[in-house]
Structures are given as C-alpha cells and as structure tokens.
Length: 382
Ligand code: C2E
Ligand code: CA
Ligand code: CA
Ligand code: CA
Image 1 (tube, helix red, strand yellow):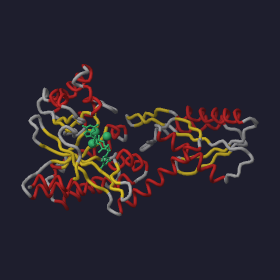
Image 2 (cartoon, protein in one colour; image 1 turned 180 degrees about the vertical axis):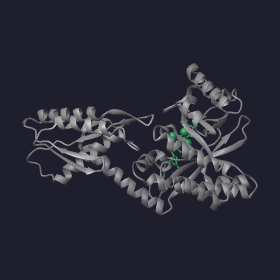
Image 3 (cartoon, protein in one colour; image 1 turned 45 degrees about the vertical axis):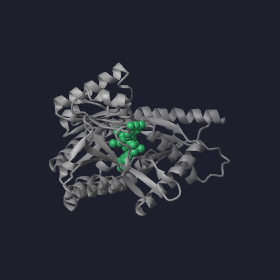
Image 4 (cartoon, protein in one colour; image 1 turned 30 degrees about the horizontal axis):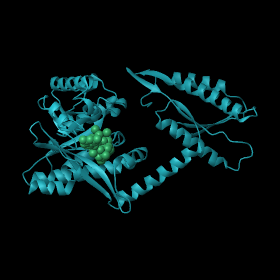
C-alpha cells in the first residue's frame, strides 16, 4: 500500500536498479498495469530443471530486492511483491497470451497465499481459477436473481434473554439447495462481489431492524462487513443513506469487522469508523484474538464490542490456557468499557463456564442456530 509515498521514491529507484542488475540484456521487461510487470527470460540452459532453477533464482532476487520496509510520515509501509512463473518449452502450442495468463494465475495464487512469495504455475491452479470464475459468475446471477437469504442467530445474556442477533448470509441455490458462506464468501472476497453481497445484507438487516422497531420490539442486529467493502470510497455515504431511508435508531445497527482491517491504512480506517460511530452506529471486532491483536488499536478505535472467537470458547471449560485467555479478554474489555460476545457456545458446559463472567453475551448452537430472518422476526413479534 504505497499511498502517500514520497520520501520512499528514492528507495524505489534503488530497488529498481538492483533488479536491473539481475536481468540480462536479452531479457524483456514489460509493464502490464500500474503495478504489474511481466519479465520474459530466455534461459541458456537446456534441461527443464536448469531452466526452472534459473527462473527461481531471478524471481527470488527480485522478491528479496523488493521486500522493503519504508518509513514514511511516521508510518511503516511494507513493500512486497507476488511473483508467478510459467515455464514453457520451445515447442509449445500455447499462445503467448495463454502463457501470460498462466503466469498471472500463479501470481494470483502467490498473492492469495499472503504475497511476498514466488509460485510456479500448475495445471491444478488453472482448474481452480476456472472453478472460482464460474462460482463468481453464478453468485453474481444469484445476487441479481434474489437467491441470497438473510439468516439470524440469536445472542443471549447470562439469564438466557435474547439481547441481539447476527445476520448471516445463505445462498438458496435452485438446484443445490442451501449453500453455506464458507463455500462462496472467499470467492466473493476475491472479486468485488463481496461489496454487492454485503450491501444487500446491510439493507435487509436494516429492514428487519425497522420492522421490529415499528412494533415496539427493538433489537440490535450485527452484520458482517468485509474489509474490501469497508475501504470502498462510498462506504460512509452508503451507511448514512441507509440510516435515513430505513429510519432506524442507528444504535440498533452493529457492524462486525475483523482485525485484518487494521493492517490496512490505519488512519483511514480510524477516520471512517469515527464518522460512522458519530452517526450512532456500533462497531464490533469479530473473531477477536485470531488476528492482529493489538491493544493500541483497541484504544484508538470507537469499538463497542469484542467477539471472542469460537476457537477459544471450544476448550475453555477444560483448558486452563483458553480459560485464562477468555478471562483476560473479558477484563481488558471491562476496563475499556467494551461489551463482549462469546461465539460458538455449543454445550451446557460452555454456557455455565461463561456465566462466571458478568455481562458476557453468548452466541451459539446451544442458544439457537441461524434461522431464516423474516420468520424469526415474525415469531418474535407475535
Ligand atoms: P462469523 O462471522 O465468525 O460467523 C459465525 C459463524 O459461526 C457462522 O457460520 C455461524 O453459523 C457459526 N456458528 C454459530 N454458532 C456456532 C456454534 O455453536 N458452533 C459452531 N461450530 N459454529 C457456530 P456461517 O453462517 O457459516 O458463516 C461463516 C462466516 O462467513 C462468518 O463467520 C463470516 O465471516 C462469513 N459471513 C457470513 N455472512 C456474511 C455476510 O453477510 N457478509 C460477509 N462479509 N461475511 C459473512
Ligand atoms: Ca461475524
Ligand atoms: Ca466470528
Ligand atoms: Ca469470521
């Protein structure tokens, strides 16, 4: 993320020079897009193993030359690159474009695996890329054809009273039936489809909040916001418009974001969260403890709730370390005046263990599985 990079310019020139050194005069470098380059190598080696080795050597040299921490305006930016390699024999019937696409598929894999790495193309990647492409197309149609469903899972307090709910998406596929998010959220997140999906869920969530509010039975509902959606330029305006059109009490809407959002442009994230929080909307940190947990951001951000990840809850009644972790998160939250929710409460033991912590909200199969939202709300209003 090179936003606002100026003092780093000289470093970039230096890096460019170092890369130039590892290339030969008969190698070709082309710029494909703003930050995408293709390098065509003509190795002099003969065996496939030697050619592969040569490509890896060059790629590693470039990767390490680019891997740089840049200090800029008091912030540290980590500069990395993702490299994909396609080795192709001289007598191939692949077109240059196909070769380039294969290299790009490998590059994409390198990026999805966290970046700062070199990946060789394999046939299985092409198959997976095709499957993802098809799934993404089907999901796009599903959004347009209204096949998404909003499910609600209740959240209860220590006495078992429902104090909130979480919106969870389901895909009602005409042939395959109900599809769980694990299958399509990752694909949606790779494409921009997640934005459309999250927008749809946000709008439906506000409609349900409005309905309960109209019937004097207000309930706070949480909705998952993907980082990709949050960093969209229009996100704040979208929320503003949604609050106006649905006329809900903003504090009944809780946005769940994950810690992965915090490794982005922190200043931008803080500013946006503060603006939205000033409208009265609440924020929750989802899967807390599994990502980049830093006490510093907890203090800087307007956070109303922490959701303790289910991986800590699962063994907490029996495992002293997990129990201690839950206790620690709970006491930090108490000091910072933040609410906590325990996820994945499946058994009586879980629930009993958690009631030791006053104020801790529980969510899990024990208290209710996710159910179709419209029907759940209707039953509540009866
Ligand atoms: P999450 O936000 O951590 O949601 C909690 C997941 O745990 C849900 O899975 C829920 O059904 C499941 N769960 C609830 N209670 C229990 C329990 O007692 N035991 C176990 N083992 N699991 C429990 P689900 O609905 O399959 O959603 C999976 C993930 O997909 C969510 O994890 C969230 O990251 C994502 N997701 C779901 N809906 C949306 C959405 O509308 N937008 C976005 N961006 N992501 C979504
Ligand atoms: Ca969630
Ligand atoms: Ca979670
Ligand atoms: Ca999650």
